[in-house]
Length: 204
Image (cartoon, rainbow, N blue to C red):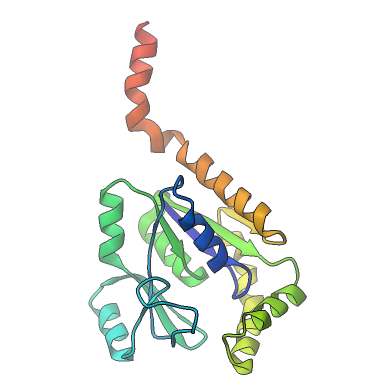
């Protein structure tokens, strides 16, 4: 399956993504997006994003159909390279996407039933603002833009399969992992492995 996590900036999407990837029992593969945004001091190229220094390269990838999804967010381009996703799905493995609502919509349209989407909500706008400021990696104008855009992003929660309120990180993580466990047990996802067992049970 494709597990999508979306949230407005500061609601905890990146933190929860990191926690999910550190849990070896979940065995998720992270989809690393490309972006034209400048790298923050705490970020590493190829791990958090593939940072493109040339906007023309992003446009070329879009035109060539090399991006599974793409979006303009806060004046920057973001996109998911198609080839790595197709490779992981062909291997029968689950992949984690950290994308905004625009990217999530495109992935749902293209991959359909393979997608499980979760929207993270902050407990309050005051706390969201505080988290953006505590991060101390963006300019004041960028923080203002992200905070204002958050209101529009939050209204997209109905487009998702699940909603998690991130008022407590530990609880939010438990809820997200519970969703992963439940989705992995859906009948259509375990069909191939269960059919043999069912045949044996019926024959006993």
